[in-house]
Image 1: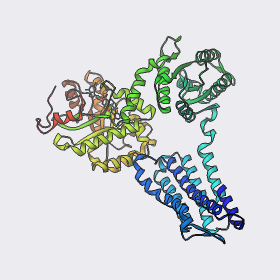
Image 2: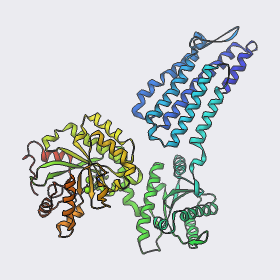
Image 3: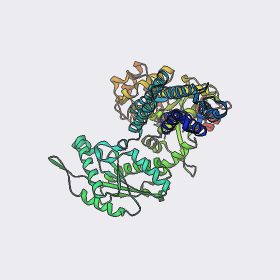
Image 4: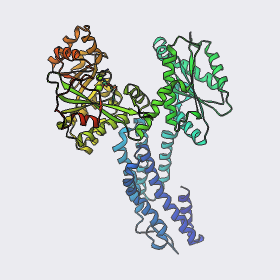
Length: 595
Ligand code: C2E
Ligand code: MG
Ligand code: MG
């Protein structure tokens, strides 16, 4: 804007300004003009997260018009392409319209990026991005139609204002009701603290938060959390307080803070009730501390570790009768934190392993399918159980990446092996309910299938009852996946609510009886199980029994009509290469030895 004003003034008074000054003023004006449209476009790419390595080539090509325009501006001194200066002052050059070409090109590309990738944004962010691009588009249009009316800068100011309020407004980092900053703010503060070297973070969680919420009601708990926040902010004005949801707080401070004293003061305050309106609430808290010695290198890792630690503190200590203990050090949640770090490392290096466990026909014992089960290894090469790392992945938001790696690896396996030769008609892949909520899951799976030229017929997706409890959230995705050709299995049947009436609303072809059902039936309990199995089969589901460990179990379940069996009796989950060695060509085909 400054160069706009300066160059306009210089052009108006060209007689009294030297030609060199005129050149410089106009050259800067044009260069900044082009840069402005380009910067708005780059900003939009950041907003929709496409500025990643994979698209560098395309980005480089799309930046050519910008760099070309810059070169034309500078060389206009000799060529007069964009503008020229002579004794009669300033003249537009033959390529002056490059200005419009670039402006419309980049605003167009921004809008295209929003259309293609904008689905991943929260609606609010998408609207802000659309609004600022609309302001720019209006500005460019006005400039094109009414070049004499100088309103472009006004429209740019509007665009920048929209960006400021939409993306950079400090209020976005404040948890509205609780007078504390939110997780986004914490991430920002931690990133800065890490760059500067020092940080100490105190975590605090209200004991039994969820139960309290249920017992005393959401509104009262929310108000109390607000009171707690304002008490802490006033008592420790030099520290910064964050509220992370679910009764979890975080606090940062400089090197001089005596954290032990902070704990003591907060604990003392919690010995008195929190008055809310007509009643008083007695609460207690637990603390977790993290400092540089924990060796966590990014803000996200620190936040994940803190949330996880607070959650285990809540779960493990709240339940313990030893109420004198209320501070949890990192070493006490070391196992979970270690698993989290292992998981982060494994995902970063794309080293998730997929084991395959055979699924056999109950009568012939012939191998017909396999279930893909994720495995990760810790630094000693020991396999970590998914029952440990899947909940963590779900909790800290890594489940998508984990699921994506498992899916790709199964597709790669199918693409590089003759699976029919191995006896496999399909491979089952587990989907976490949190994966099903992602609205672009079908699209992502689709592009992986395409990459490996794999047909969806050979992949069955296992979802647990848990996912269908919130069926409205996952329905669209499941229908999309089903339309693409995937079949669905209901996993762990018998562990959830098992709503028989609504079952038929869902697109399952197969139901997997959970190990616990299999065990109770085999041990003589569970008289209802045969009836349920018969009913499910009548409706048309095929039935798989999981966790078959003994010949008796296999016989019992075959006896009540299970079509397929899976369990240690036939085989444990095997690494892919071992699976191929065991069931490949040279082996007695298909019929499984009983071990
Ligand atoms: P699941 O889907 O119900 O998988 C069956 C689990 O039972 C597997 O445990 C398998 O090793 C175990 N199992 C199979 N046969 C027997 C048996 O005869 N006896 C006993 N005691 N156990 C048997 P695993 O591999 O530890 O996986 C545990 C759970 O973790 C899975 O339960 C699944 O819910 C989840 N999981 C595993 N891989 C993935 C994945 O890639 N994505 C997602 N979202 N979840 C996964
Ligand atoms: Mg499963
Ligand atoms: Mg299962």
